[in-house]
Image (cartoon, rainbow, N blue to C red; front, side, top):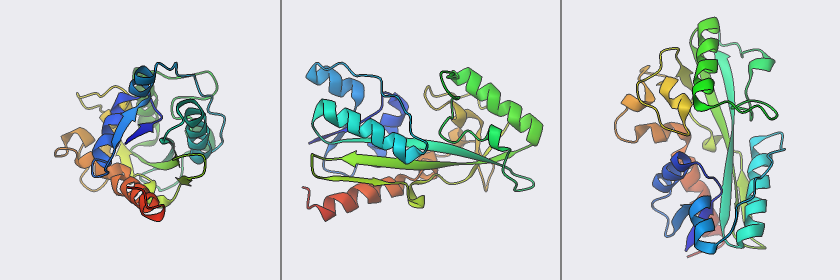
Length: 215
């Protein structure tokens, strides 16, 4: 059984394959699913105002196309001054617009430079991703969540980038674990996965499958 992850981001697909490796099914990305079926993938306009609305928009569109189990995720990024604990001004809060608003889409390099500039202005920045997921199994069964157990742990942005970069996850190169101030990329193995709610996604899928007696 395949479950399509509604994203073309290879790094996100690899993360979710690791996180959901205990499931009795195969997680594949949009590109592989489209090639297998000879389908052209349309661009989904993310017009929602919350991560959950955008996750739902994408999942519904991809389910219409593939007619098989599919899920989509979306995130919002929220920032605080780490020294004072105050949130950054509203116009600097990325929310669901992590790469920019409207038609403006920052590249990986531009994104890193933007957040480094905020650190230079405000000092260390505390950040947190609020994540959402929408799973559509068939015409009758679906589940979605934006509960806090899906959110990432708080972490810090620094203005000194790590030498390592992963395409699709540019901000990880300036991200530090809160307690140790260790770069994500210097953590052992895939320990950084725990910072982005791996357990929450696993519980979400297992609860869904138990509830509907799937497999």
